Length: 514
Image 1: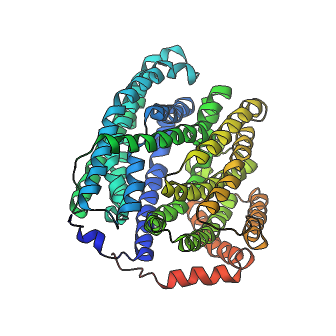
Image 2: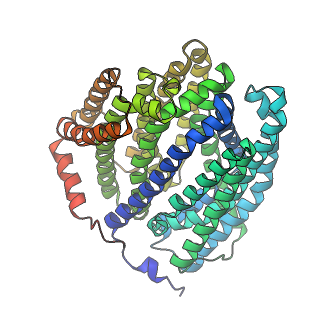
Image 3: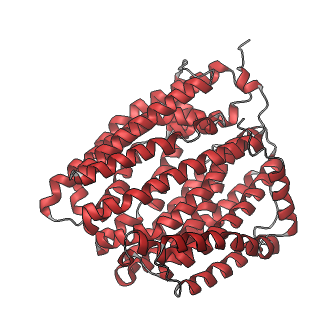
């Protein structure tokens, strides 16, 4: 009989592990955002408005080389998450080897597509001809970064699949801080776009080696086992759906800056990118909680305990509403002042644009949560179709609206297109977990209506808030957070949901690290 490792035999405290994974993700995300907060003014002033917009477009554009990626590491993560309590060491090692084998096959195709992107990048960025070689060299380095990340992603997939993401607590934040310092050095020494890309390449290499060390130290069974044609075919089939999902997701979330810059120029990309900094910082923090909990749900899903999955999902939704409303109110009140103090008020897109960007972030938080739960089933067909429809409608509407309405038109197109996911994903997940309750009820609509009211009120009030001192801004922002929490807690959350959240929180040992 094959031996199962001690790690898999031991019963995990899913609430505690979910908490630790969430804290890890929050620390990493906050570290990344703080690094961005510090280095972005250097990059904006060092590159100028136009080239900064080009940099944003290139980082999004090179991601399209992933269209050749069949996402074997994603299959690996969700397979390990589902099987970790029932599979032997040899079976899990076989999963790792299969993922590595398939990844090695697709890397040349990523390079080929990357070469095509490199050639056409100058035309898509609407840049002057004198910058063509600069753009192509920078783009080539970004493609190399993509390949390196693809290889090292295998280690992080194993760690997260084992529900041990917290073992890397602070690692990403530390490495990204070092990378940020290198980017500032590159800019201040006059190395421009190429220097930025080189610094990012070093960061990705350092991060990959760090996670490789963490996995070898904390996953006793880790190794490269044997694979076979049958397993490769199974992975290939699942990976094909993950590849299709990646293609549609790239269209969905990695086209806004490209479309905006192509239609009305990279300067507007700069304004859009800097305005969304705070909203997307919130998106990352809230999503970190979901990302910390979902791998733990994988074991429950694999055992078919759907009622527990349903209860966990409901609690995550409640926590998400509390957080997005709490932080969102502060963003809508103070983002104009923040942008003015940070990089200059001329980079602020506007109050209504600020609200719509925040709504985009909130949409993403909720449909991505259900997206991750759907991934546990490894049945992705309907998800791919819904994502393709949402992305296609968003891009089509953008080409119709951006020219006349600028950033407002882009935001409106994204929100309208993603309604397919906002409604469609919950329908799919409720069917998968055998939840036959109504999608829209008084209980489910209450937080939505309350949040929209509070956020709209904050947006309206935000036009009169102008703070020109960092100390006053931080003080008023901190004071606003608990006030926003109290409003959404009593107005938007039902008594039953409040009770469930408090019960979960009471069982977490906040200062215990395992």
